[in-house]
Image (cartoon, rainbow, N blue to C red; front, side, top):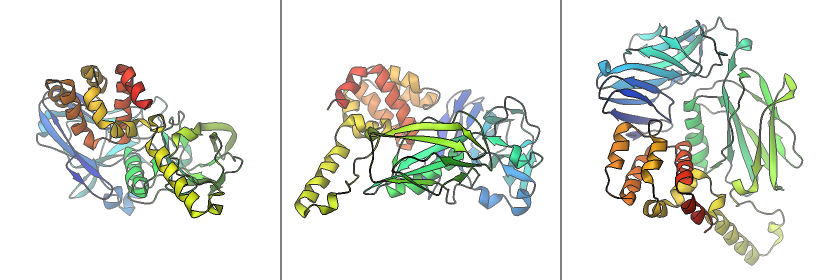
Length: 385
């Protein structure tokens, strides 16, 4: 990463040899024939996609601006899309290419379930678009759920239902939630395709207020405010069960998950706290602070990685086994070789943490999983502190 702006980051990858590499943040896949340095970031559809374009084309994935110091070294780029093609091709799916003259369209060389591939590309801004021959009420997409606990004195959860677009995930996580000190709650993704334009709602839960009552699944550019459901309760039980349903098929649950107390930040005030005197309230606030910073079993994977940085650097063993789990997906070949070249495990871990500065929480969760598998006794010891 070389620059940070309001809602986007710019990334730089340096490849030292041929191969196929996937970026865990943007979901781009690069096939390279030789050494090359690639610089890329999420671009803005709103800036390039004019009103006359919208009359004929629908956005079908993130817009990505890519630059290469040697275009000839790049054999192909696989651009992500969020359409559900049900194992079939799609002749209406194109790649929009934005240059100084405006938007041009190019047929991809192949269309896969999650990517469209373009061979020997020239570089600027590219993104998948769908010709409007596909009627909107027939278009199914891959969707995602993002769930956050708001930073306030009662339990308030923000529930997002969005197209499975990495630029939307990044924008919500950084621009709308982390700036407000929200706590991201990791849950399984939606396993089935959903109809774009449909309305979805969460089943009523006793003691929980939900506002608004339903959400429309639609694409909104990352730089705009995304819609979400707000869940509010003053009486948190041991767990909440969230069940998402389609308004057009209320018998079918399209996604469900449990929220347990152990996953939450325990800064929630008891309803009777306001009746206590100031001494009790001060003691209560101190207790909440201790709970939040205390037991590591209540810390999610990426927070665990950040919180126990020094302990993991000094005590982690089998570091190369950890790197093997991350190689190719989260670590480039050059990064992998640089870390392995360090003389000791602490030096290898410290080098890995330097690279991690550009990782998002989902990448850190993968590191936590790798450490838990290869260093189970160390992780258990830290969680027991």
